[in-house]
Length: 118
Image (cartoon, rainbow, N blue to C red; front, top):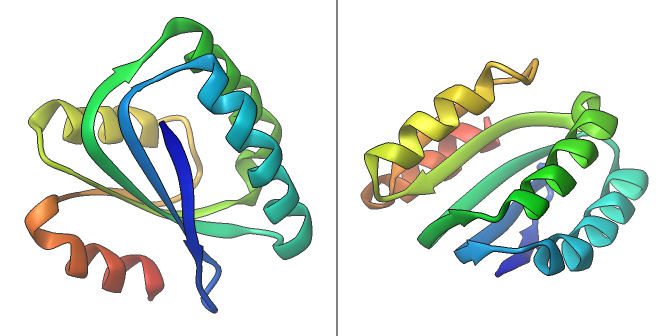
């Protein structure tokens, strides 16, 4: 499940990703995200992974297509999780975006918030 949790005054959008992400999850959240990007312009992201089990192939394709269209509207991104493979996934993702991306362990969520807001 994907949910938009908050958009603060610094244009940091908090998103939670729980369990295994599906195409249906993206069909719900991507129009919301597109509206926020249209309204606010470039956004920063705080992505919180909770009990994250990965992403289905069709969902990954939806994300790749959306990211390709909007990558110039993405700012600094902090990813908060609790496993080494999530850290590696963040590092690999950062190769495809012209923005700073950094992984933080869940115990350092406040540090992630500070980093993405500055």
